[in-house]
Amino acid sequence: MPRGEGAYYNAHLVHLKIADVNWTDISQPGARRHYLWRHYVAYETMWPIGGPLFLARDDVARFSEWLFHNLAAVVHRDWRVGVESLDGAPSCAPGDGERWQLIRRMFVNETGGYDGSDQSLFLLQAIPRSWLRPGSRLAIKDMGTWLGGKVDLEARVADDGTSIQVDVRLAGLKVAPKEVWMHLRSFDGRPLAAATTGGGEAVSLAGDDRIALPRATDQVLRIVGHF
Image 1 (cartoon, rainbow, N blue to C red):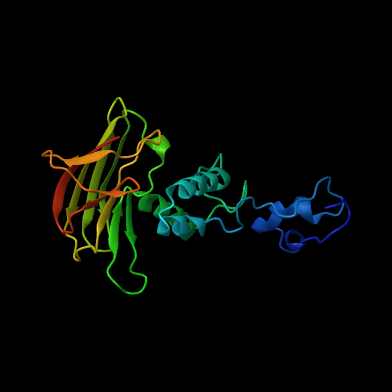
Image 2 (cartoon, rainbow, N blue to C red):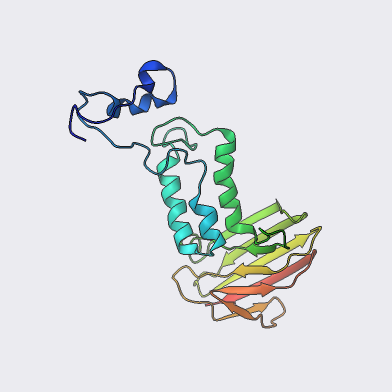
């Protein structure tokens, strides 16, 4: 906006101690620069609208892009916590909880059921390829689910990157999921070619690097995916 022209905000002048003091550079007619909006991602970044939408669409590439942009823009470089904007006020606890929920759903995500029908369980749905480099290990333990019970899950990528081994335990789910899915993704974009159980039995592929697991409230499985 041209210097000395345009709309100005005076919240920081009326309420000197509120977070909107970081609007100063768009609120002073004589400021050297004027920004239309300083909140680079969204004003209330703790309500991450894009993440749930991309997961519901199973659009992992767009979800990963959204996640890293969100974290880059709102995790304060000094405080190491989420903020409303670059160098802005820290998010409240429920706000940061929203962001951690999205990271949790990358590993364990209850999908569907929006119309009151049974929900499915999606494991490892949205793990970024950069987290799956050769030799990488990812694990969660005692993760509660909306279906009750807990999930333990450990994924190990082979040193040559040609396969991934996943040990999963579902314990004490109160309701059997409508379906149980798992994404087995490679670090370099190679598609999933085959999957076997720990005993060597073949697992049917569902496309898009997905495999279908048995519907059960209690089970222990070892899955090996080959790329």
